[in-house]
Length: 371
Ligand SMILES: C=C1C[C@]23C[C@H]1CC[C@H]2[C@]1(C)CCC[C@@](C)(C(=O)O)[C@H]1[C@@H]3C(=O)O
Ligand SMILES: O=C(O)CCC(=O)C(=O)O
Ligand SMILES: [Fe+2]
Image (cartoon, rainbow, N blue to C red; front, side):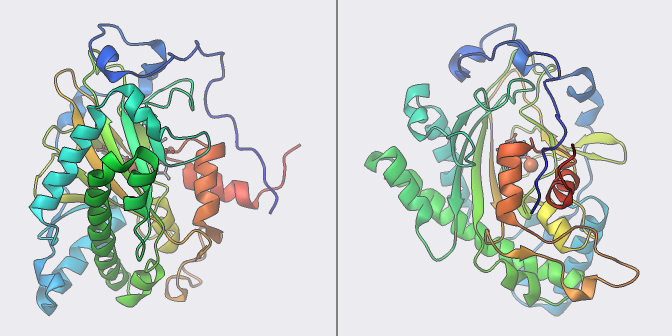
């Protein structure tokens, strides 16, 4: 593979020095926010974005219990949503409300710890897992107003449980238990959704479920502290998820916005629903039929916001290629073969994920070095 460096994407002029640290307890109180957190004019939050985006609310009960008529309706609604913007919500998904409550409580207790304690899990440069207080060491401008804790999940292992016990210590055992259970439930739900996606694309129930059977996924806890200048910054900047399928649960605060039909609109939180969206890797697997859509998260002056994101990803070295049924003379291949390990490395080392990640990556893996 011949690699070339993608075009410089930011920081054309020398940026001011980054703030030493994003200590939420200090920064949330400040009337003025450091320059590195101020986003450019065209990317700042817009007031009209509070309008609600109508995304289908899909009741999975009938599909999960094998009722053919409900299943057909689920398949139709999911297919429609994924062909237009790739976002939908699911209810009656089989995840217990107790597990969700525990998962949100644990987010609260983790991020309420002192910066020093959280930094025991500090994310290392070039790695996608660990604790990050904003991305002060990683990017030098357009910093997100958030803290995150990310870790890997793979079925048939206790990798999440071990991560908490080994990285943070025995006293974090309980977090490990909660998130091991949560990730197992998310992986199961994502494979069920893969059945729906396979049926809606006409390649059969098993194709994508089998493809993701041994997934190597990422779980991310997002914590957005209050900000005294929310109109100047973003919690998560505009991006399409490079991963395959995202299952998001947001608390009742609100802040998720999606860009469709030329404008930003909000997906309001619903306690009993998960927000599901197609990521770039699934867009490639569907040969461009299903859309990975631009979204972001805004912050507010008053209260912290929490969200739990499970990013379904294929096994690292599995070739991402659409099934034969989705490729023909009317539908030639849109993206080259690639592995998730290469795309992940691209987003961690060479390119800051945005709305063009997949196109930039496709060029990068195919293109010769430009001299
Ligand atoms: C593989 C990943 C990279 C990011 C985390 C997962 C899936 C989504 C990506 C991300 C959230 C997209 C927005 C920008 C980003 C830098 C962020 O704000 O967190 C992205 C993640 C990352 O690179 O850490
Ligand atoms: O917190 C949210 O609502 C969205 C977060 C997000 O898009 C992400 O982590 O990829
Ligand atoms: Fe996202």
